[in-house]
Amino acid sequence: MMRLVGGLAFVLVLGAAGCSGGSGRCEGDLAQISTGCPQTFDGTAAQIPACPAYTVTYAVQLCGDLIRFRQIGLFGLSGSSCYYDASSHQLVGAVEGTDIATYCGGTSAERSAGRVAASCTTEPVATKDCESQP
Image 1: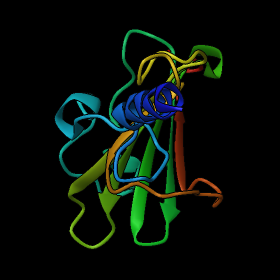
Image 2: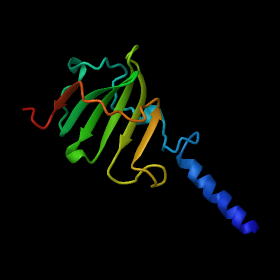
Image 3: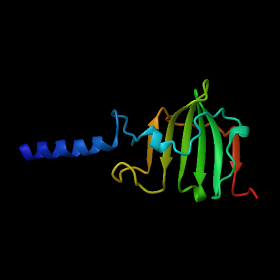
Image 4: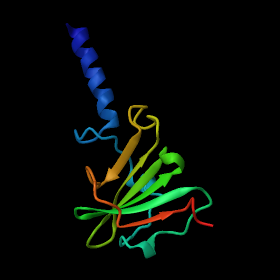
């Protein structure tokens, strides 16, 4: 019986290493995850950055009291989202993801940090498709 209890405790410790605060989400450091995020963003098309040398699509959504600035990679296989407070326009959270589970010990295809929207189903208020840019 002791082995079973010890084994369960070991499994629980490993599971907790990839998640924070019982939220069930894979979390990381905001400074690391938000490296491609502007520090401030007001959600307007004018503030969407110039297209980089690689193919990406940008989309802006309003998610309650947050502004979500999405950067979607080629074929939608990877991407990131930067979250801004809708009032101050300051960066408050970020999410990055891929098409395979590479985060939190290979248990998640996505990791997040800070304040992010649990879901955001609103239509984009601004977009920029860098694939069709000259």
